[in-house]
Image (cartoon, rainbow, N blue to C red; front, side, top):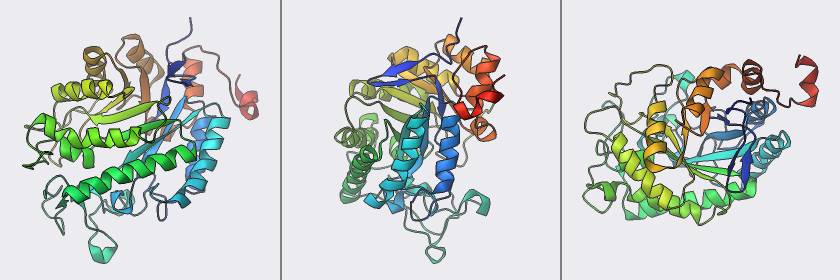
Length: 356
């Protein structure tokens, strides 16, 4: 019997050939937001390696939305050409290209990981960050984030809308809105980073308002017959923060609004989080949302083996399994997993002689 991991999944008009997804992973390799040959080879090799869906790394909707100065962007039309080339190659390998649109909020303006992830001050090429409230991620940062006013909120919404329009032109077939990992949307969702007293703060309904407005702006440009995902952090792993019950509640509303899948991660909001990391440590959150909301979910987080991924699907804990670091270690993950699960899948013709 064929495995579930290598069974197709149709969402709206897109059919994924299998349930293996490349999770969005920042490469910190762009200049002025432009993709280059690193991104072509990095994403392209995963496509030829047999994955069903590739979600491109967090892609900034404006220059100030970047985590680092080296992040990918889609805030100007000139960015489209190279992204389109990459997507055309992904499609040629019978894989589906997706994009994750993001705004880093208060976690923006930092150096790349191999230079320490340090907050950049203005003299170092950093920029003023924004957030729900003027609360820094670390106490020793050189400046506070600015709390977004009404004009600032509307600008971010407009930036997501314009970025979505460009994403359509670039040929993406799956859209993911990044509401996780302590970035801007998450900063509005959680009471730990949102102490506003206007219509965007306080109650649950107010704290989710910004995320819903972003989703609505994206939907105004994203084709209704293409899949729309939202990534959330199911819990802040910190007392008094965003929690799994609120994640279920938000997911119910997102489902009503037409979102197709919740990509379920966790954490990233506060520096003092305490995460009990272990194999599949976030899968139960995806399972809870899938069961209680009756919406498709994606599971991610220390999923490294074929049988582990297959069990997640068999136990109806998720509909897609996302791989991050394991796919960095092995671009041909699906080819190896298929062998382990005794599935005969199509290899690139150029590689077929190595199949047996």
